[in-house]
Image 1 (tube, helix red, strand yellow):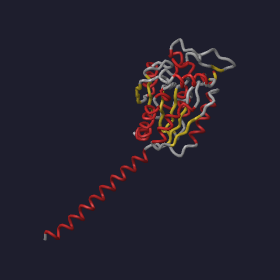
Image 2 (cartoon, rainbow, N blue to C red):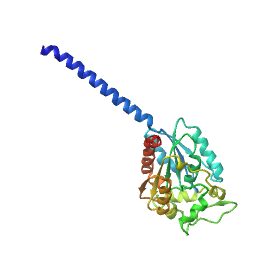
Image 3 (tube, one colour):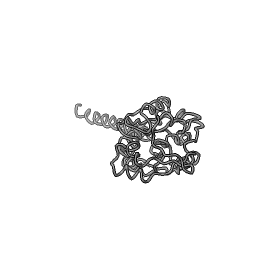
Image 4 (cartoon, rainbow, N blue to C red):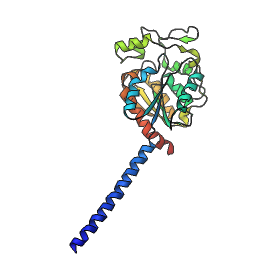
Length: 263
């Protein structure tokens, strides 16, 4: 009798293990399906999309499809349109990421149905009717931005490293200063019609050593948006100096955005 029972017990054990394994596999598959796999990166003023290279590489290594938007930064309307074209190309939901002025762009463009969540990286997060021009007043006096010429702004090259890229290598900061992209006044004056953070989950990477957008101003914007705040010690160019830290916040958003939205 004992020998007859043993095969039966073995079969029961095997069936139980198969059921357990199938449940584990289903749960794992569900988690994978809930994860957003696309990321769209939007740069700020005075720079271009190449600064995202370190973040891009980190995200690609983790298996994400990453698109870097190249804005002209001459007109807010045009920059939003350029970003929306990049969103339209995504195969499924996307996390929309903005640095500095790029935060204003994603606040408007993020209303696109494909956008599952927003990530602000030391960025402006305006409310309805606000623009970067109105919000930059909260950054305090003394930003070494040169007077506009033909409707475009430049940053004082000599002061660029200290203000914009304090924790970037001297050589890299000098290159960023010398390769500035003219920032159109019309881009700064573009007002938000409907802030996407009111309807979409958001995350905010707050840079504690920022001399462009003071940490207190970042904190106020992040709290108003109801964003998950992640503090990182670094300069305004955190996406260049600490790409892994930035990528970690984006990956957190990609894993949680659909779950948060479903609540």
